[in-house]
Length: 251
Ligand code: ZN
Image (tube, rainbow, N blue to C red):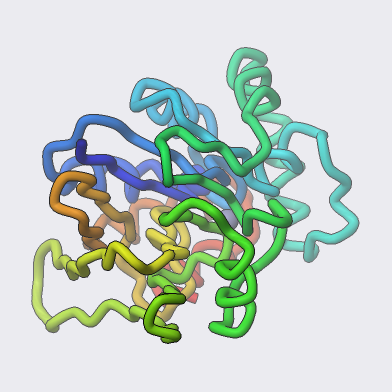
């Protein structure tokens, strides 16, 4: 079973299409939330994502853009984008996004999907310390999470009393790049595929992951896409300019 793990598309259709084109053969798609918010194509992205699979968890932007969460905790740029999105979502897509389940969801034995973390769907897991304390209390071997828009993984191995971080390294060069790591049977992992539509790890290329259950490994991908095209749409839509500039910075 090969599973495409996608997250934080954020209404960026150019990035989503590029990732789907670059994606290797797979059997299922798991989506970790934040389909909308920030980008200029919330309806198109929601419709495309709906055709890809049936496993979803909701993100904070999915909640905010559908009126299920107050915008008080959002910075002004994010709040403006959420209101813009709310005004444009079709009724059908609005209802679909409202119905997305809260994580964790466990589509496979020993694999769970969350947006933020297993203990709090809105938590940002950004440090090893946070990740290890979560993993100590996590039952499934593999937890896929999003929300931070930073690609990489954390692991703990109780048998060997070890823990660590997996930060993908890519060689410079054009085209799609990938980075693979094997899963140790005795370890537990928190893995983030990165963000398709708004990377924040300094690499502006769109990010996703592939989990291969038979081979017991995870592959991270980075995919160049039409950033200028996505930026033009953001500006033309009257969304905050910062949402366009940050795409090329990957921050
Ligand atoms: Zn997000």
